[in-house]
Amino acid sequence: MKGVRVLVGTKKGAFILTSSKKRQSWKIDGPHFAGWEIYHMTGSPADPDRLYASQTSSWFGQVMQRSDDGGKTWETVGNEFKYKGEAGQHQWYDGSLKPWEFKRVWHLEPSLDDPDTVYAGVEDAALFRTRDGGKSWDELPGLRQHGSGPQWSPGAGGMCLHTILLDPSRPKRMTIAISAAGVFRSEDSGKTWQPSNKGLVSQYIPNPTAEVGHCVHRIASHPDRPDVLFMQKHWDVMRSDDAGANWYEISGDLPTDFGFPIAVHAHDPDTIYVVPIKSDSEHFPPDGKLRVYRSRKGGNEWKALTKGLPQKNCYVNVLRDAMSVDRHDPCGVYFGTTGGQVYASADEGNSWQAIAGHLPSVLSVEVQTLS
Amino acid sequence: MIRVQLPAPLRRLTKTEGLVELEVTAPVTQRKLLDALELRFPMLRGTTRNQQTQKRRAYVRFFACGEDLSDASPDDLLPQDVVAGKEPFLVVGALAGG
Image (tube, each protein chain N blue to C red):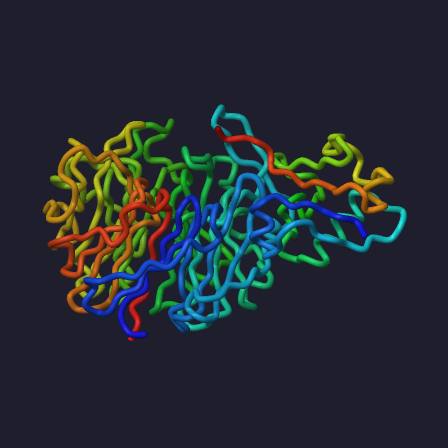
């Protein structure tokens, strides 16, 4: 088919929303894996019909799913995530040390050119890879064994590796983010890693400018300009112009500097989107108004996008993996809420429509542009 | 034949309805029963017990013949009525979470 496929992971199953390129009329298919938490569902850039999903449950653990037909049918694949060598210890909430223990897969990042190769970011934080379409998963242990592990600590949602950026111009470069350890970068396909947090300031940790320990919520980049990274941190929106070597703040005139997702326009590397949320603990939009903020200048100057979004009595959250863009022209922007709505804009965020109104709480939104 | 009752989320995962029937060679223990269950349904690996430590998952319980066998040794013999197929072996998701 041509058009758009929106892959929605929720707390009670997965849903697939499809539309033509016009993006006005939508069909909802699901729930797949009813009753299970779908932390992330995504497709291979090399084969859009190859999908992967992370299916989890506090009761029954981790299950991995794969589809070869765009989500019509699914098969379970390997679900054993075993840390290599000694598991090691990380900080716990009370300051004690706790052994690494696998809990779930938070994020899947398929290879840019091989449908059988996928990277998985997991809790407790580590990076795994499959090269056989999900049958088996092997850890890239250099990250967990970087040496700073005892200084890593869980955020409120757990110690998760939630962001994996692959650089299309430098195939050996990978950038990942962990809550709450920060950003790490590898230049040798994941064998060795270096912290990449210079310029981040977190007032709530013992050393606000520490090399590791920052609660990074999400990083995004544009494939045509991979050295420019945008970050939504627990307090502050940040930017790097040197692939993460140095960061500077671009929160500018945002109503709050807290939030979870950040996304980059498909055709303009300087246009970025965030959803400001109130901290602490409240985690809902300020003034009960759900507003996406767009900067056309790579940060600092932001405009509220409100047309079609609820502007009173709205107290939902938008989680870190729940915002994405399509590559049609004009660029489409999508996000899901903890209230079960999925909103879409077919005009770069100028106007929005709810393309699903009553799903379970949304954990992730990915978009496939089909041609 | 030994009969196993799976909880609803695992019945959906295995695409089964009702009781699952398994052939398990004597002597029948919980470990051998779960091994046979996972051999027939590989997607169940890791869902009732940790794949590496074999430890039961915290929110999964095992019952049979009115007894809670969750904390029994996995190498204890299962009740004769389970082995004879008169009573099912129950895999239960704990009531937790509110």
